Image (cartoon, rainbow, N blue to C red; front, side, top):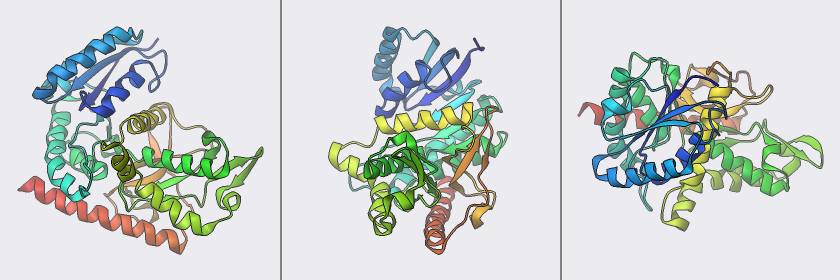
Length: 333
């Protein structure tokens, strides 16, 4: 059994965290032999609710969960953490634009970046879930200059999972048999779900998704639109933003980052661009990545980009550049 690792979840009294903390505590993320200290951060008015979450975690009797620390104090929450799930943010409500979220949430992630810089381990791994996730992660990193930029990521795994599920439904195959779907760009309605390199196992044979689907019009229109607007569709149906699926996706993201992707496979993560695929350097942009058991990752290089993809990729990059400019303006105000 490994030494205990310290894991922080922010927004810990909220909907996403309610599912997330149990996934973490039972070993779905870091493995069934990894003891955990779980730090739960929320704002002062939510401490009563958070105490209820703590009671339930204790009542679950998770063998791996060695310590639970509920707090509303950044100095306590970020102290020596190994992994930070930054979930807490103002949730998007029906009819709300992402630019409205930007102004409300950027200052939160500036403060959390400063807290990471001051209190966390310098090798801390950070996943930003709270929206707008890409730009929140960029701002968080900016205000944590002592922590390597590659340690900051944003979640687009939810979009990847959604895309795989849509393809599996279309083909009547198992969702785990759909591989190498890519989410390019922003976790927003401009994201580009790309299946040009994806495969699916259909009737026992691994086949390119485009060949298996045999409907380019659907793949280039309805499929893309469905993934781009899925979050809004969930809000319209539930009157609440995605929670269970977001929690599961954040666990998938960190599990693969922590443990490594299987040989020959990749996953989508928003990371700082190094200029690959002509994406402006320094943008927090979703790429296909391979991860390793030493908790590092690399962008998958050399994939063919056709004109249709280029247009979609540039569009989402443009939105991210605009978000970055707005966020930096908010932070300096």
